[in-house]
Length: 218
Image (cartoon, rainbow, N blue to C red):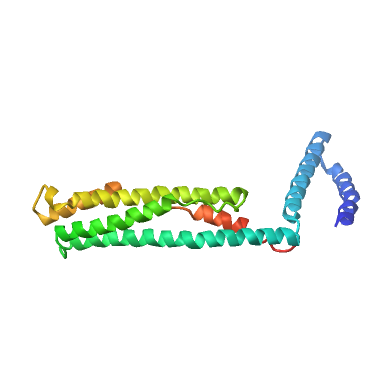
C-alpha cells in the first residue's frame, strides 16, 4: 500500500503539469493545486483513522478483563433483584389506587394496603441505601457503578416518599370529604405530585458492557 502511494506521486505531478496549460493564469492554477492537496490530506487522514486498529490484547489483559466481567456480573445480578422489587412495589402502588378509583375497595382497605406497602418500601429503601460498588472493580467501571447506585438510591427514596404521603392522604380519620370520587382524586393528585420521574441507568450499563467486552481480534 505504501509503495503504491509513492508511485502515484509522479503520476499526480505529471497530471498537474499537463493541466497547467488549461488555466488562464498562475494564481488559478496554484489555487487548484492547493485544493487538490488539501483534499488529498483530508482523505488520507480519514483512511488512516479508519484503518487504525486497537492493538490485540495479550492473555494477561484478557484474564484481567474477564475478572472484571465476573465482578460486575455478580454485583449486577444482586442489584437487578432490588430493581425488580422496586418495580413490583410500584405496580402494587398503582394497583391499590386503581382498585380504589374503581370503587372495588374502601378507603379503609386502601389505607391498610398502603401501610403494608410502605413497610416493604421502607425496608427496600434501607437496603438500597447500603449499596456500594464492588471494591475490586477498577477505574471508570467503578465510577459508572457508583453513578448507577446514586441514581437508584435517589429513585428508591422518592418512591418510598410517594407511597408514604399517599398512605397519609388515605388515612380514614383525615379525610376532608366522604365522597369516594373526591377521596380518589386526592390520592391521584398526591401520586402525580410526588411520583419520581423514572430510573434511567441505560447509559451507564451500556458503557460498562462496552468497557468489559473483549475486542474482536484484528
